[in-house]
Image (tube, rainbow, N blue to C red; front, side, top):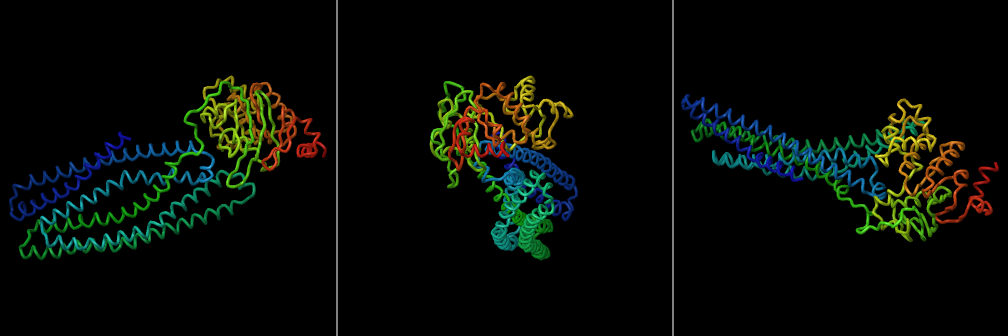
Length: 562
């Protein structure tokens, strides 16, 4: 940040000097009027005019350079803050994303951040400019004429009072506006992400009404905030006009009496605007300050957010890389709700564990605990004999490849999606992964094969095609542990059977955890566990579980005996 801070401070220092150029121009202008025109010393005029032009040229060049420096500094600062915010978001755990929905985060990373850029490029420089202009103008006017200056000075307290009142009245509106903008963004984001559902249920009118409601609420807040600002700004402008009139009347009377010169009168009139201008600008800046402050308050929690799930200070590296998994009396409680309760099992290297159970039984949470997307609230999870909480997070997650039931594909090429977890993978391995999951044939029929760019979240692909690409992405990593969370639900049973056979060969060294509801998807597993209400109620092989009159046999009979 030093490379940004030094030129920024230097530019502010130069910006503080620039108002003095206005006073220097005023002094030269007074000399032009009093000595060059009134005293008829015409020989002075060329030099004085050249001096005025030179001063203006220097001010113009300096202002141009300062604008460039301030703009570059603000963009560099924005780049750094945006980068830090994005990195902060990447480090967060699941609780963070539950607290901050996507639309909320997008709002804070866009419009709120832009107000921070504005504070550097415009707000701070104008605060300094206004203060220096007011103080230097006041000193110079006192030097020209004390009585008139004191009259002008008496007009300033009402402006400060109005400014303070405006800050108090307007700020709550801007806080509500930022939140309402986030709510509006959330509605838009959800609508776009769920456009297929919207169209499928023909609820476009309902979604439009929902958007209109949030949009109208935001409009009302913006109108109210602007009306409040105008309500205070109008008397400020009136006081500024009064100051100019006071300078004209008072200064004109003194000029008629001969107390001041014509040049001094012109300075009093012109600089009365330089005295009121910063005060009127201050009103606008106070209005902007409320927006900047509100935006900063919304960015700070994300900027300084610390994830609850982090790597230990002294991570342990296991002596082996077998992918052996052991759950030792594991419990998970979230928001006073018991998700898992006393779960224990062990899966050895190369074995396949299948997990079945009714919806909401905790199956996906179980696999999320292995990845440390959540931390256990009781018991422990061991991978290759080491507690997952003792691993470096990145090293832990490199040992695990996941294909989830909620398929997410990037707006990228098919090849880019498959090699997402291993960017340096060879083309042959990409093709092999695609063939393993029966995706090679349909990829070849796309417009550009593996170079075909798929739409956002896989738009244009069928559910089965998306699942196969997500599965190819997982197995391409060749991790010791492979987690498949209901990843073949959109496939026909024949394709599923072929993929399972290919996986046995391609991933024969990997320990596999499979979550599924089809008996055909789990019957081949070395061990099957049934979760109900967060507890293991059945455990064994396919043949063993069929001997019980439990959940597994019930599902088997539903699927095969109808």
